[in-house]
Structures are given as C-alpha cells and as structure tokens.
Length: 565
Image 1 (spheres, rainbow, N blue to C red):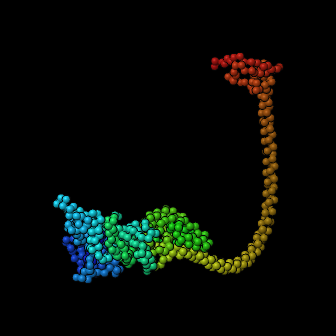
Image 2 (image 1 turned 90 degrees about the vertical axis):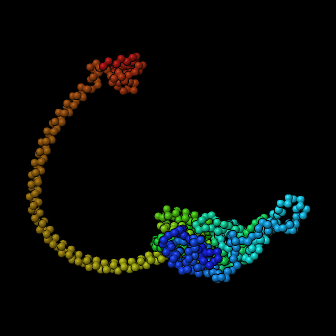
Image 3 (image 1 turned 180 degrees about the vertical axis):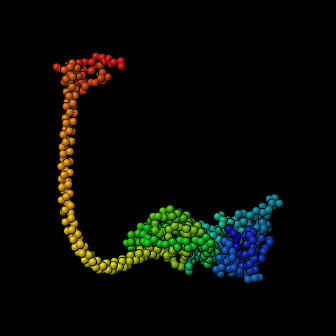
C-alpha cells in the first residue's frame, strides 16, 4: 500500500497520508488547495477537489476511505463553509455526564429508592450507590439525549447471512483499516422485521439491484439504542443508501482493473483463440444452480456432441474465492484435455456479483492457459471478469455461443465442401478432356512405334536366326565334351567309394559283439538291460545278467573292488 486518502471528520477536507517519497510529494504539491498540517502530519486538500485527488492518487495505488466513493458518486454532500450541520459526536468529544451527575444528589438517591435513615446509618464519607438498572437507565437517557436525531454511519457487514430467514436481522458493522483483516471497531446492529420488509425488497428492486450480504460496505441511517435490562448497546437501521455501496463496488472494480492494466493482463485471456470445434467444455459453477441446468439442457438439445466436465464451486459467499481459484488451478493442470473453460453463475444483484471482483481471481483468470467464457450476470451488471475475458449475459447465452460456434464451423465445412466439389468437378472435366486428347496422341504415337518395332524385330529375327544356328552347334560340341568328363569322373569316384565301403564292412565284422563273445569275452548288463561299462556304476547287493558266447547267467554283487588307478 502506498498511502491512504480519507475524509476529515468535519467533511470539508481530504486527509492524505503516506511515507515520505519525493515523487509523491511532488504529486501532492500539484493538487489544488493542498496544505501541509504539521500537527497531524497529513496533507489537507479541499473535499471539493475529490475527483482530482482520486485521479492522481489512484495512479500510485493509494487506499481510499469508504466516504470517498460517496463523494465521487455525489451521494455525500460537502458541508457549506461556516454552516456546519449538527455533527455526530466523535470519540473523545461526547459530553457525557460525570460520575457525580450519574449518582445524583441525596434527593435523587431518595427518588431512586434510598432513604435519609439509610444515608445516616452509613458512613458519611461513602457516596450513595446506584443499582445496575439505575445505571443502565441513566446511560440510555444520556445516549438518547446525545444522539437525539438519526445519523448516517458506514461500515462492513458481518454475520448478516447467519440471520437469513428470520423476521428480525441482527448483525454487526465493522470499521477496518486498509489491508487489515481484523476490525478496528464494531457495533451491534438491528434491522427489525417491519423495516426489513420495506427496505430489502426496495434495494433488490432498485436500478441497479442491491442485496445485502457479509463483506459488503454500506452507509446506513441509524438511531442509537441501549437496552437497560441487558446493558446492550446497538444501533437500529432505518434506511440504507444504495448509491454508497454501489459506488464502493464500482471503485473496487476500477482499482482492480487499473492494477491489471499496469500488469498488462487485461487483454491476455481475451486474445486467446477459440479452438474450432470447441467440444471439450470445462465448467466452473454450482451444481445446484438453475443456470447450470439450463446450460446442460441447451447443449444436450443441440446434439453437437459436447463433452462437459464440471468442477463444482461456490458462486457467492466467502468460499467463492478459494473454490474458484482451486477450480482454475485444476483446469490449468489439465489444459490439454479441454478446449474452453466456462465460469457461470446466472444473474443476481450487483452486490452478489461483486464476489467475483477480486484481484487474485482476476489475475488467475487473465493468466489462465485456456480461453475463458464468463456468464455470471446480466448485461447491465458487469464484473471484472466480464472485462478481462469473453463475456456472455447468462449461462444459457454461453451455451448458445458454444452451439453457434459448432454450427458455424459445420456450415463453414459444408460451404467449403460445396466449393471443393464444384472445383473438383471443373478440374475433372478439364482433366478428362486433356486425357482424351492425350489418349489419341498416345494411340497415334503407339501405332507408329509398333510399326517401327515390327520392322526392327523382323530384321533382328533374321539376324538372330543365323547367329542361333552357329551358337547351337558350338553349344552341342561343348555339351559332348562335358558329358565325357563327367562320365570319367563318376567312374573314378565310384571306385574310391567302393574301397571305403569294403574297409567299413571289415571293421564292422571285427567289432560285432557276437565275435567278441566268441573270443571269450562277456557282456555285463543290469536288470534294465543296459550295459554296465564300469564298476563304478555298480552297487553291492545288485543283481546283474552276464552274457557269454553260448548263453547268459544271472549274478549277484556281494562287494565292489575298484582299481586303485
């Protein structure tokens, strides 16, 4: 925050405060009627120059008091010089009675229920005491005397929504310093049923309409009330100035837009192109809103094949900001799955739509990678989002915009198809004519070339016939020589193979097991018929079968004695 601009309690001057900066001092010195107040250490500028002050200070991001919007809107009049209206007593200026006055004299004590005897029985130095009801009644009388007339107060509404649906609305008005979260001061407020029944519809039916809610700053005509039974101090609302609140909302909107201009973000999302066709639709709205149902029904009836994904959010109240920012972040992380993102609410008063006038929301929308279409109000009511993104009047209008985009794309494709078909038909006709002419040229050239080829073929045939006869005679001679060589080679190979076969037959006879047995050898087999080639394959108590040349015998192994080697 650079500094603050507030209205002086007397209503005639603007008080400008800021930490010393040479450029700001130079700017202030350029304001008409400016004067430095060394006691309060503020710059004073006549309130009649509020437009110039607002224009210059807003460029440096000053914070403006709630009365500044009323001055700009003309709903708060500047007092005439030396003709001060009855001022509302300020803190430290109330001429409240002293303790002695509240306690009264002996006669007052007696009127309140005391007696001379009781006074005499007590300590002469001890003052008479008041009962709680006497104290509260006298405080009430003092307040009624001091605040005999109704007066205007400004403050931010707190806990108004909690009394929704009740005949009498009880809430608080708070004074908050710029950028502060906690209230500087609060006062209890009562809006009784009869006044509410007349006032709230009047505000809602105004032009533009206004709906009271938490967080809204209002200017209310009130009277002071003090209930002695509970010692409760409150103010009772008699009327509300809608122009103050609407001017404050407009001031907030202008401030946000000015900051977005300085950041270069006002046109960033609006300049994003809309994919054609835009069929994958992301939606941020309340699933209970009638506008959401109308939006769905309109897209379904179009039969355009839209794929809709809803991320539910709150469309008013304190949870709107957190849920809307979460939805924007989610769609940003999944941007490749969507063509466009819609933020919808569907009507409401200007105060309801002001929930969307938030700098963090505006920056997130302006920097969002998806093209945003906003449908959160009517044409006469615009939020910051309507300025920085593509805006339609209502959710139904958003649906109609999307359907028109698809229908326009379909008509464009159909028109391009018609033009393409006509162009192709013309091209085919031209190519067909050219093909016919080319066919005739090819036929003529082909016939001529065939005649030339026939002549060359006849000549080549005669030449080839002579060459073929000589070649055949040569090839026959070569073939006879080859047959003779193959015959001689085959005979020699057969002789060599015969010798090899005879040698193999001799080895086979020598190695025949029958001949080995006839020489006195034996073959040892296990019970499974397999030959036991080594003693290491045997085990004690094993039965074996030994084959001799003239028969076989079954034997039993008692022990095994392998060779030492």
